[in-house]
Image (cartoon, rainbow over all chains, first blue to last red; front, side, top):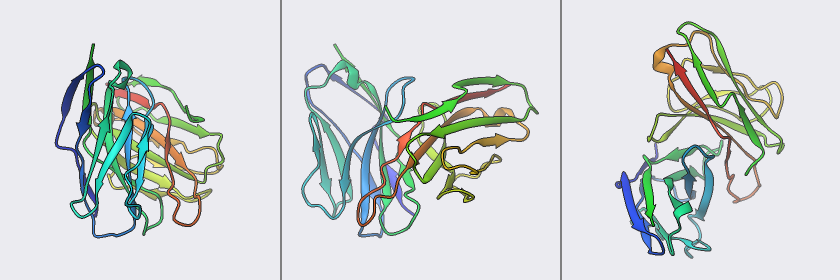
Length: 116
Length: 116
């Protein structure tokens, strides 16, 4: 079974600065997908960024980028130019590409607070 | 925001009551999921469905049941609610894209259930 670990329960950053959220995972599979989801207070869970394991290039979405280290099974999220609206719970998630069902395994989450 | 809806958003009920949490999506997605999330904690998959008349139990044991009679509708039922069922319940859906393409999950706003 896959596991996802987020070792930072809480983090804070000043507005306009850069912050990196850590995520490690454990799997014996070679084909899989990794995601970062954002859950603002009392708001819907939304997808921030995704990475296919077979792609070597790190995914980037505007101010969000990942550092995907497949051998180390690490998948960190970097948020540049942090904004107050980035305050949320961030979840790292794993999806197998080798078994059916598109099931997500989530990490414990990191509560990010952006301070003005 | 994705077209996936959950009702009610908040529910407070007494022990022993039967409840049904509704989830509907208008995207025509074949796969749907129910997650349970305690405050500030990770999501745990409790049920999922590949399509009409398909239901499977997830990773976390749950006393709830689900049904999938229509593609767009995936209700979750608790026959006799207990205080231990107090939690947030999130519904999600996804679509198979074919080939190596991942199946991004879209989440509903959640139902926060409190059983007294």
